[in-house]
Amino acid sequence: MFLIENPVLQRELLVNLRMTRAFVLLLVYIGLLGLVVYAAWPNQARIDLTQHSQEAERLVDLFFLGQYALMALMVPSFAAGTITGEKERQTYEMLLASPMRPAAIVLGKLLAALCHLAVLVFCSLPIVMLCLPLGGVSPYEVLATYAGMAASVALFGMICVAASSYFSRTSAALVVSYLVILPLTLFGILCYSVSSGMGRLVFIGGILPASCLIVAGALLRVTSHRLLYPPDIGAEAKDVVDPELEQKLAVGMVIRSDQFPDKLFAPAKRSDLMADYVNPIFDKEMRSELFGQGTLMLRLVIQLSMFLALPLMAICLYIKPEWAAWYACYVVLFNVLVGPVFSAGSITSERERQTLELLLTTTVSPWHILSGKLISGLRVSFVLTAFIIWPLLLVWVLPPWTYWADTLTFIGYIFIVVLTALTTTTLAMFCSVIFSRTSVSLMTTYLILVLLYAAPVAMWIFAQEFSPKSHGTPPAGQSATLADSQTVWLQWLTSTSPLAAAFSLPLTVREVENVSPVAGYWWKHAAAGFILFYVLLDSFLLATMLWLFHRRWRVWS
Image (cartoon, one colour):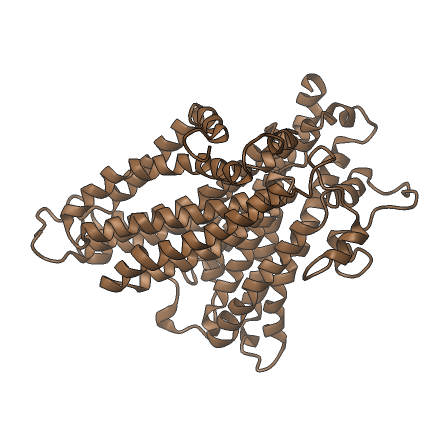
């Protein structure tokens, strides 16, 4: 009943693989990989296959690293809702009451979630086979890379399933999964990039798969034990949370609602009458929604973010002060992961509880509804982000005053984080207005943020790495003026990314040779464009949401 006759696995496969999104995802994934290989293909008319080709080796490395990063980003979207989906559909208790063993349930959920990714990896084999004749990479290294990638994906999936068993909402399991998986992904990319030859082959073909399978087995056992003795049944598969008892039994950090700064993002439940001037939507969102499932998700988010912030702070702000932009990018990335969680379900949760029509028929105006939900989500995400942004202020005002000459740059870092927090929250709420399910709203928000923040930077790096101009071999029929115009176009495109903005701010401690290719450009030319773009985008999203509330929903809700 674990594999061949596993009803959970059979049911999940029949439902998931027949969905339209599975075929659309396969088409987009293979299309992107093929486009990358096509754009980075060597431009020489003749290629000497008898010599070691560094360009072909870079192409294959880019293919594998890009595929590995895409897999890491997609695993939580498939696996983070495996068990929380049962809780949200109120079928969790029925599943636990079945004669199946807990390990069979967990294994069936895991394999069904990873089946999509296995199909994607298998379908990418013809593309990598086209790159092998170029030389630079042996077939054994390709097999070892796929073995390491498969083991890593299995570990990532098991992390998501374990997180899904500890939470009642898919959004909470999703953000915790990302916070754990992304550092592991960066570590794997770093190890792959710095290793070569036999050392790389031993690492990705032996050490990495063995380590991943051991950790995944331990998580499988822990998750199965939790399903065997479930603490979250008896109330429609929801935890019966007692805040006082939770604080006594909590391990590690404890959130106290009556103390600063905890009361900023997790205020205590109201025990008195609400004043006349208080927005009831904002008060309800802050005091009821956040504490509905306890503080486990908040505690994990804060502890994981601080655990990663301490070494990054030491390295990027003290040991290597010219790397200060990397820490600012870490703060931006943290807000991108956490911010949408508190706003992507602001309106969809009302639909799922079938309370949206009741909310629209109240005397509360659409502006108060939207502003209350927006400010509550922005308040929580920004306070959580402030826990890791304070090192920037600390190294600026304390001796030895390494960054005192870079005061405007550090103000720019903080401004970038604030504008990013506002954009992520507004965009997540807009998706919540458009879509009817929280999971769809959340994943759409993440996709749009990746396209806005990461895609321009990836295009710039790709162009600098594989541009014929950078290797001194411009393609036939393309002039230097055309290449320069393409560079300027990519520079303006990166102005939509706060990551590129952080690296473009000037630092006096930065060596001349370490300056980013776009350093100074954003500061001199695209600062106004960056600010104007996101001010207009946020204003457009808010105006559209207000129009939908006034026009569309009054008639069709």
